[in-house]
Image (cartoon, helix red, strand yellow):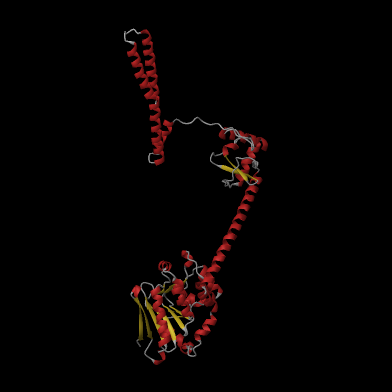
Length: 465
């Protein structure tokens, strides 16, 4: 017989709907309410979807006789594909205002609830099915799966709690820690599904267990509240769950820092043991040129052979780019493997020869406490610096400003030098005029010569100023 239609709630965001109907027109099926939600493309748990589903549950509770609620999907491939993660993150208070309300409504609903899972139920869709009292799964199509582990989204306490309360421990582990996909047969075996089949098998399941009359006394919801009190507490007090999570994260950070330091200390000891075992010389902790670095040679046998050759006094021919870390007392020295080309039979002699090589490469070695002689190179000419900056930093504002300042200073110096030369020339002319005034070979009068001298002196004074 065709189903008996009751009412429809629209889902505006996806042009979908939640439709309520009875499976048949028979009186015995009038208390079986089938809620079919259709929200393309995969029944995501969005705010509008949740509002429509909650309203449908409210209408059944307050306007129809008590019976059994069956939820299923009008989309063949999906029961529900969980949250729209992007929308959930961008919607203020999505968890408290929508998702936790939906889960709480199903786990405390005052009638038996059955999830007829016709297709895939992933993540939040799987959780929604778990918040029902019973689950009937399609035996040939669709999986149960919590796949947050695969894309790095941690599960909050209300999401985890329902699996902890309703599933066996081994199944709980496989669901959460392995993100395992459960087919119909696997779900039934693991205790996730209560039966396999479609609508006919669901109706038979309801009649066999006489679920239609279980809510008649009015305490069905109250019993479920006591039964699942731990999950209800996580839904009602999410702030406490979040505070507990913050405390756990802080403790993890402290313990991680302690463990990291322990690992570093262990690595330091292992390196020291390694170089003691191969017989390599170690540098004094007082030497200022020591620097802690990572060991780049892991071949212990090769290191032992190098040490044996170095102690026997035979020259070695090793690659230039390979290096050792010589470690003692928490200090280290990185040197080129060319330094191993030494003929030394004693550690002290080897150290002296190493210092000679360092003197050749880095200048004379000075012990701590002795002042180092500082040799300063003559400063570079300004023109050299200007040319260098012009070639290397043509787009640098500071470099171009320095070049401009240098050119201005250069021109000022040139003008000053020109002024000094002009003044020198005028002095020479005045001296010549004075000489001529004493000799008076031209026959000019003394007054004219004195006037010329005054004019020249005035010009000289002006140029100097």
